[in-house]
Image (cartoon, rainbow, N blue to C red; front, side, top):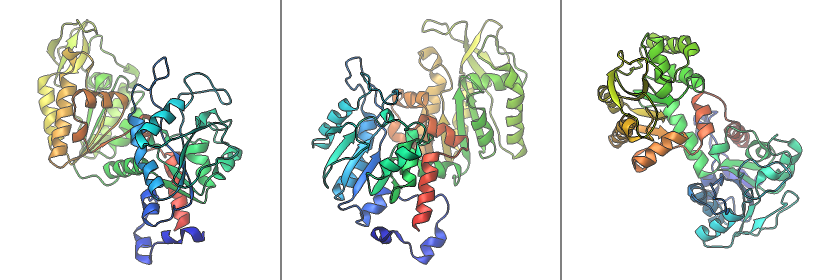
Amino acid sequence: MPAFVGLQPDREKRRRRNRTMILTLDQLCRRGLLRGKRVFIRSDLNVPQDDSGAITEDTRIRASLPAIRMALDAGAAVMVTSHLGRPTEGETRPGESLAPVAQRLSELLGIMVPLVRDWVGGVTVAPGQVVLLENCRLNRGERTDSEELSRRLAGLCDVYVNDAFGTAHRAEATTHGMARFVPLACAGPLLASEVEALGRALEQPKRPLVAIVAGSKVSTKLTILNNLARKVDRLIVGGGIANTFLMAEGFAIGKSLVEPDLAPECRNVLKTLADKGATLPLPIDVVTATEISAHARPVLRRADDVRPDEMILDVGPATCQVLTHVINEAGTIIWNGPLGVFEFEAFAQGTHDLALAVASATARGAFSIAGGGDTLAAIAKYRIADRISCISTGGGAFLEFLEGKTLPAVAILQERALSAI
């Protein structure tokens, strides 16, 4: 395509490229390829709202601003869309309109951002202007990645930008389908940074590579555990997942949350680690209680001394020391999940110490990436966001990447990048 000949790399650069590359919005802007072009940006503006429809937290809107400003400054006519909630296609119900988001975008950008409804048939926007297209999941065929819809959407623009890593694991018309048919497809700064960070952590890590995987059930993260066991040097487990590993090793865990049927799977993970010289440090002491509540009385026990009527709700100080030492030696840290029921202070010390250890290791030069709702809540609680190398905005996409799965929205950008070389 003649309009984009500036993207052609020289022969030496072509040799250095590999199948993981993606084109980025920044590259296009630096080459001056967006002036006068129609640019379609798929953002993640799925923000929480109260009963009146007012936005209660606008982090995702703020995170979307760099891509929008980049395209505007480059002289493009900019269209932005996002999903909001889980609407029924073809039906608009209260709380599912992006109208409040359009208002907040207008305030943050300092320019009017009109909301355009029924936009599939065409959009009027001039260079230097930006419009917000109504909730894309209202369009019939969005969730099923309809080729007919995807082709119609592709016809709206010259350049497609995906900046919504949180939906990268979903093959939908605005995250995957239309990228197949547009003249040029690229990643926005938010998606590009997350893909780069995850690739750096898993494919080219600074060793030792330490992964922290915690949560209530092994069953929800078994694929992650198996995938990481083949890659990491140290694997730390916490929460109900750690309980099942303890049971697999013959420990009595009382009434703790556990999945007995998955004990053999845990032993397989331990064997995979052992076969490659990696380790999984199990808790040596734990904090227990007979109930889960703010009023529960915490009791410190050795890991082999949990009583029949007790539940393991956190790790103890000796375990914290061991885990802190492991993290301090890390070159790369992947963190998903708290070690205990950190919502209650009596069972928060393990997660607190873990968070500070990750932050300290990062300050000393380790590369850290953290993701998942509970992990982000812990990061916010202990105020260490500025001491984590990368905080992933995509819960489901982050987990599927850790599982080793292909993310459809990333894969199509890689495919299109190769075709542009």
